[in-house]
Image 1 (cartoon, rainbow, N blue to C red):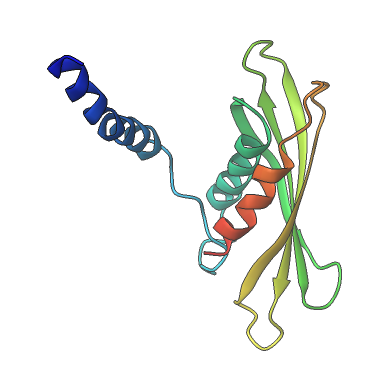
Image 2: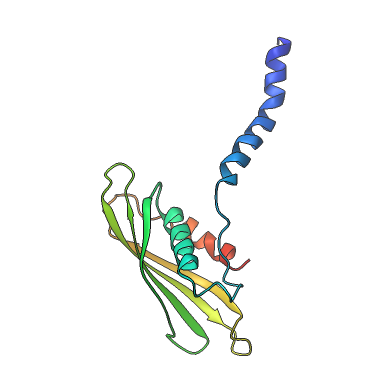
Length: 144
């Protein structure tokens, strides 16, 4: 094997690391529900909803927050209800999204919240369903 080819093969893992790191560097960090000071802001709601839509669908465009509210379905529980829209990459058609983030609230400490589940539903008629695995993976991320 010529020296240049061997050197290229040796450098390939390092190049892959640089490319992946550069791609992730542009991503914003996910919001966390542990910080009580930001949970009520519209910017926080938009970031949460955007992260969920990006996990559910392959390349959503023009993500917008339409409505948000916290509800108290039962003691020790809060639900964050988000109504959002996004446009498809190819068709540019807008799709409506309903997201429910289920949160457990510690009765002894009202500021201690933990996301327990995420429900996602949209109007996209695609034969590919939303990626539930990626959506549920966000539960850990929101609780960090």
